[in-house]
Image (cartoon, rainbow, N blue to C red; front, side, top):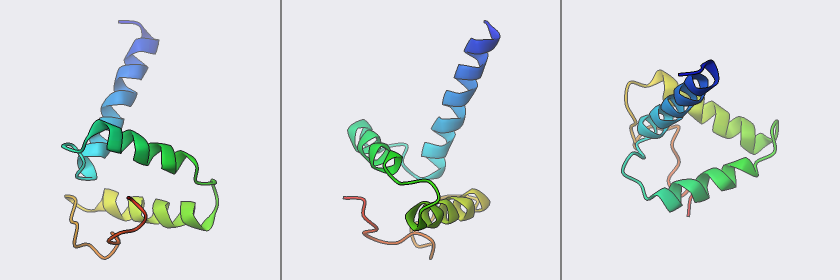
Length: 79
């Protein structure tokens, strides 16, 4: 396996882990892609970007996804 291929495999593995950490491992693929497409439209450095990054930072610290966590807002625009 080439070094470039190893980097690609590692990147996919890490991104898959993020999906699992978020509690979305059983989510519909189209839903996931739609959500990621919306996230890609968030302007880096904007208030929304900082808000979402803060939520992510807290989620990385948590042992498992907890939908009752105060950092996860119900109906926070994921429709």
